[in-house]
Image 1 (tube, rainbow, N blue to C red):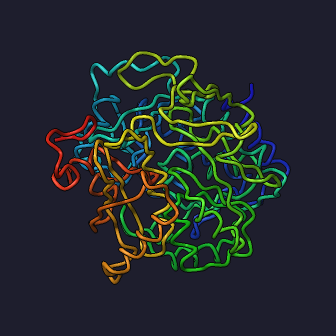
Image 2: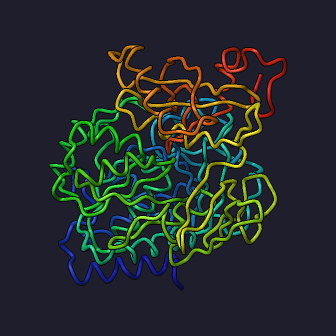
Length: 486
């Protein structure tokens, strides 16, 4: 059955026969060939069975062990729950309780109520009455979303592998031999695109620890160290969020020669950033997806002119509601944890339009604000234009019921002074219609997962930012607009 775990396992078995010595997994310190995978997975399956692990948190750093435990869980249809490293203690406790986890692989287990077992890698706890899950759930991916409590998206075994098969079909003509995981594997996009797709293709999934890629905690990134890893692993493909692409290009305007395919998504990608990347020879392809749809839904294809976020993948169907909301079908979630089952079509909350058979996005329906003059503005559009300026790293734009829009600006570095920021805002305004221009701005601290103002995929958590800067954003307004937290 397409998209089933049996199909992936069959491909792994074929790769093991056809090229057993070819590396399947490589973290820079250890390599594991395709001929060794089955034995490694069987050993971990036995350990999971002995521990009685049924709902398992995977809280490891990127590396061979993350991949092997994930594949072992997939093989036996146990419930896998990847844990983002940036989740706070409160968020982790919410994850443990709401999913009814009975096992934890990785550091931090004892503080969450898990006890040691005979297996040094697996900690367990007794769960007398585990919460009900949607039938067929084998993976719960928690999204940081726009509130403090992560929301669990329940997926069956076929959903992520259906997406993996679609992606593999798109990139197969490029002859990819190595993919370098630049994002944490706890991110569904990298889990699918950086592990399952290379294994589907018989390529090597390169999985160094995130610190070796230049990550400094959840909020810092050293692009030179990342470029050194790219030079060492010589990957043909990467998956990046816009902030990483921007940082890498600032450090190396010209693309590393090994690259053939760089998928960019997770947040809106400004047109000037894409144009700059293409001018530097970066083979960038913008895509679009949601955790509720097992990640990628649309993607621009190699050999085709870029249009919006691309055509739907082979497995996906996309339609637009009367108000322009994007709705998707195919590999969709079973439902949110603790909520009713999902419908056949998933309403994304994104607004879009068609460019031929490709999808173009117009912003989030709930994020569009209406100015005091009655003009609708998608803040992501203006923010993308601001962030295309070298002086600006991040921006949030707000203008609900205001006569003039306001922006919170994060400078590209501490050395960028207010005069440089003012010039960047003025340059941006020159290319915008009057109703979308920024009339007031102030510099602020970076938006990061650590301060709960940014998701793992690089999306702004607007409610959290609105709450933090409420007084300034609402100055002159007698009442707070809907959607701005007090």
